[in-house]
Image (cartoon, rainbow, N blue to C red; front, side, top):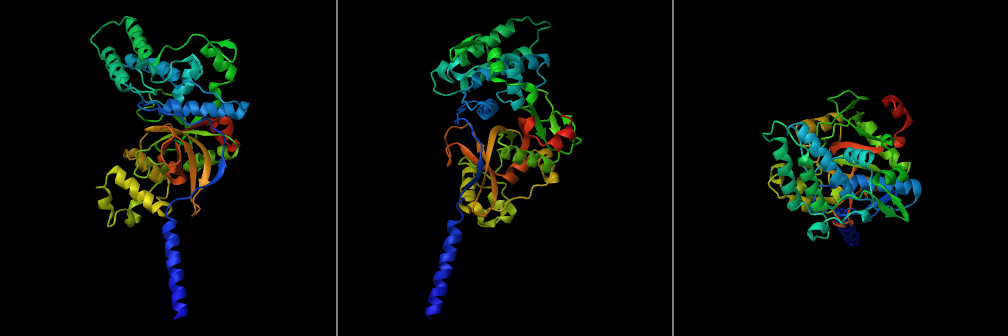
Length: 393
C-alpha cells in the first residue's frame, strides 16, 4: 500500500513536470551587442529600422560606440528613388511603404546618412510621438501613381518638387549639413566618417529555381530595387548565420512572419499542425477555423512541446512557389538560445517597440528561419572562406 502511494505521488509529480515544461524557458547560448529596440509604429518601415539597427550593431562591433541613426532620413531618400523608378516604369512596378536591406545600403551609398537628432523626430510633423504613415502614404501613393500612370506625353520636373514637398511635410526635411559631436558633416561625409562601405555587404538566399553559387534578383514584391542576392544551399545559408553569430557579427533577416507559428508575443515556431492534435482538440481542420489570437494562445500552451516541420530545400522551395512563404518583414538576428528540450532559436530584435513577452525580442526557431527566410544581409567578412571562394568574393 505504501509503495502504491509513493508510485502515485511520483506519477503525479512527473505529470506536473511535463505540464510545467510546456512553457518555454530560454537559455542564452550567445548574444552579440545591439542598440536599443525601436518602434516603427504605424509605418511600413521595418526594412529601414532593421537595417539601420544592423548598421548600428556593426558600428558597435567595430568602434564600441553606440549610434542612433535616422530611419526617416533613409525612408525619405528611398521613397524618392522608388518614385523615380516607378515613374520610369510607367507604373509597372511597386511603389509602397515596404523595402529591403538593399535599399538602406543604396541610400547610404548615394545620399549618406544622418543621426536621429539631425532629423525631425518620427511622427512629430503631425503631432504624434512615433512614426505614423496613415495620412502620409494615403497622400503620397496616389500622387506618385497619378504621375506614373497619367496621360501626359511629356513630364516636367515639377512632379519631383511636389513629391519632395509631401515627404518634407510628413517626415521633415533631410538636412544638408548638421553638427554631431562638435563636428560639422554632410550626410555623405558622415557616412564616410562612419566607414560604411557598400562593398562590404552581401545578400544571400537559397532557392532552387535559380542555379546555386550565382546571383539573381529575388522575385519578391517589396524588393523593387533590382540588387541581386547570392544563391547557396539551405545548409550553407543556415551555417552562414550560425558562423557569423559565433564570430561576433549580427545578421539582418528578411522573410515571412505571416505564418501561424509566428506570434505577437515573441515566438516564431515552424509548427507542424498535422502532428500536433493538442493544438486543436480534434484535428488540423479545426485549426484553420481558429482566429490568429486563438492559434497563438494554443501554441503558447503547447510551448516547448510543439512539434516542428523538418526544413528541407524542397519544402522551402514549395512554400515559396505556392505563396505560403512570402516576404513581409525585416528584423535583426543577434544571438542563439535553447529551450529546456534543447531546441535552438535565434534571438531576434524586432521594431515593434518593447512589446511581447520579451520586451521587443523574438525567439525564432532555426526551423522557422530555415523555412521562411527570403534573404539574409551581412558583412561579407562574416561568410566562411570556403563559401566566399565558391561565390567569388
